[in-house]
Length: 222
Image 1 (cartoon, one colour):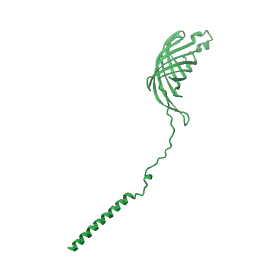
Image 2: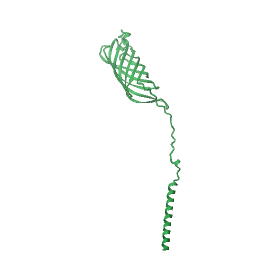
Image 3: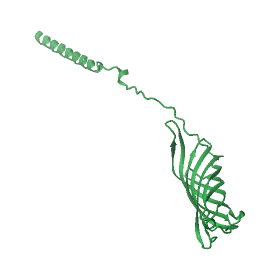
Image 4: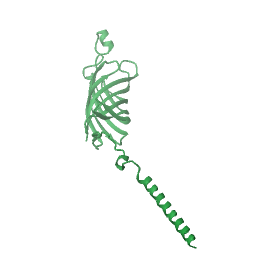
């Protein structure tokens, strides 16, 4: 009987000792990772840049003046000037009205023949007005150097209007393209080219005249 009690106590002691050893080993493995918690988190070293987003005015109206060159078919290329007013319906579409004037030069016939001029001085004044619809095709940015960028957009325009030339009014179709660049939050610069097309029989034969215009303009938003 006494030997059975000794065997039972010995087995119980072995079991308790084994459990203590297992528990100690498990705790050592869990705690002894060898990695500092502060070292486990990666500390990114990213250099932050100061970015100033473009502060574009929310006004929808744009008004300004332009100056450039206009090639009136058969009457040389001469300076042209005018004004434009636009209303931006949304970020993609806008409507625009323009008014411009130029004084045409001599025809090739007048230069070569040395005869009487085809037009009087007052008849050489060409003026036009038109109403066009525009679409901003490629909005983006223009970069000047490494640290300066301007918002801008390439756009297309098409419309109709009237051209007064040689004491006669001509119904006119207008198509063109341009690039608008925002210099300031309220000031924009345009570089554009347009074709003013109308039918005329001024030189004897009725035909469609293509009058190409290239202009540079400054406009403001309000």
